[in-house]
Length: 146
Image (cartoon, rainbow, N blue to C red; front, side):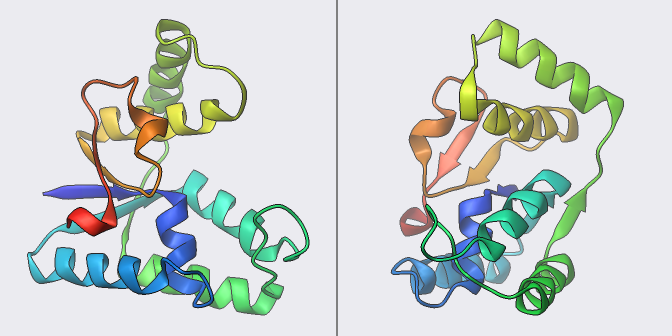
């Protein structure tokens, strides 16, 4: 099976001070042991870079240096598979935001779902199950349930 890894998973994988760090690592290890493939999108890496380089005093910031963030991004690129962007993802994203009346920050999740739909991935490993409930074809998996 294939899993898209939500950005919150990628952040917790590298941010050792986060209380979910060990749970996320254990879940990713279990998936690997079962032969599951973890995917990410360029959008995930953009969001990851944003949060990692944001100061800890800012909302949700991790406070890593550019060098540390680059090393962490390279680790993600080495461990997981990049889903390529395409015009089909844009078209699917437009369809989803209109069909599901998506607005605000949730447009980012809609784009992840669009990439999943285009690439035939139905499962997302995430800490935020509720972000994806409007998409009936998407199965959310919390790391505790791996």
